[in-house]
Length: 616
Image (tube, rainbow, N blue to C red; front, side, top):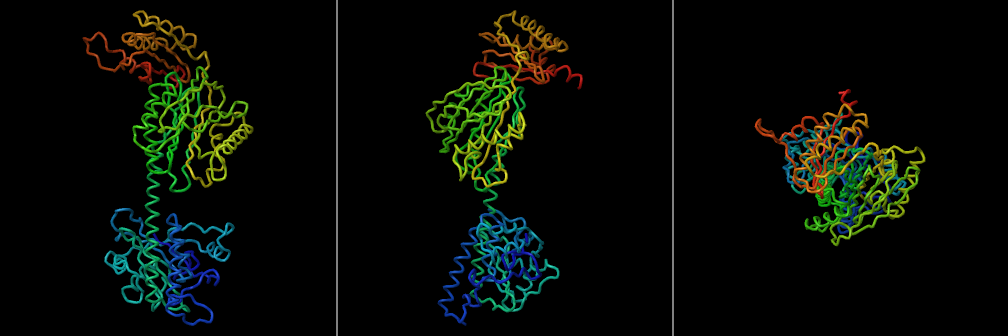
């Protein structure tokens, strides 16, 4: 890519590069042709002083270049270090795309000039670099150069040594680079232009062109050494920035892939979430959230945070999230979920610890069961706009060992909203956790005062405050659940003894319930499905069977028994007397499945309501 960096540290402008005004003598000294700093009353300092000044300049310049944390900053710092102290104009050309890691040289690729608006930089040089100084505009790509694969420019880049553009070949290479301007600038005669290739650890990355205008002494042989150091440190900075950005991009993609792409839509609860990565490239962490449907229209709400910020943290987060999903499928109490998660985390053999909060919401009973492993307590927004920090015993973080987790049961009123979050939401450099939690509660109350109840998406945005545009040292994960609950008249369940007459009893109870619900159109098919599933449960159950009907946006039937044997659908032969039960369920139900729980299994199926059937 090609960027034109000008005399004032900016880029763009005239044909031969940007010519900025000379910096004040107290701000920067120009190196003379001998490499020394010009001083009033001193026509030619001695050689020792000249070397000392050059070394001082290189020390300051390389430190300045090393300050760049990304590609744009590295190029901008190079320009500020080189212009006007060493040259009057600087052009930087980089390969597009830049080679990374062990990739081969992009010797036959295109070079793109990189430029930046010079006006803000000029003001910054004149006004200083304090807090009130205007920030320079981002560096951006400009014209493209297509070097010939066997031309002098390509040969010069491969050689890797800075040269003067004072021979036919080097002048031709310089003209090829500068030909992107219209009209193209003439290559100055003598030693007024240096071409310094940018060599990374394993490959050529581009070149920097340093130009001195008339009225200033020519470059000297010693200046080639200065240009070489500037180019070397710039190339290393670019290499570091590109590798750094690539690693962060991979880690961020890994982390986002491990987060749920979308939230489920269980009846009786509304869900929303937010995830904001850290503003700084290096801050790739292990924050995660999840919402897992459970039998009986219950839902598990999970939030967690792996300590540290690295690729390892993101990978461990993915492992822990998978373990939680597996354990949730067993329908264990929250404290047992965290106990087994802690055991599995120790087996991973990692020194990383994590915090995790696991909550289980029952929309039928309007109850919330919560267990905590060292995580921040959730905040409950009541229907009247009041807020409450849910008091849950914190427990030890995951991976520490020792267990001791407890489950706390509490009422979850309809219309209330539970917010689970990681510490990046409430902790920053200027506030501690307690202050941050109070600020969060204030933002939630303000959102509730504007509308009752506030929209869940709006509430999440309000909870984030100004974090979307600010500088964040840590990731932010937020999961919000608004409890709606299920009305008692939409749920019916029975405990049935496992005996031959149970299937007939289940059909009678189903028929009566569907008639009360005004779902007579579903009686025939539902009776048949219930009979088949209950009859299969009777074959293996040793304790009472639970038959549950739920009417939400669909009709859902669940049959729970204590047998761990999972039924499998098979295609029965004409001579077989059985084996067609699950085949009928598969043909007549919209969805069906089997969920293992700690006490056995749950076989469930769903049917659309008559209005949905008519619409279809």
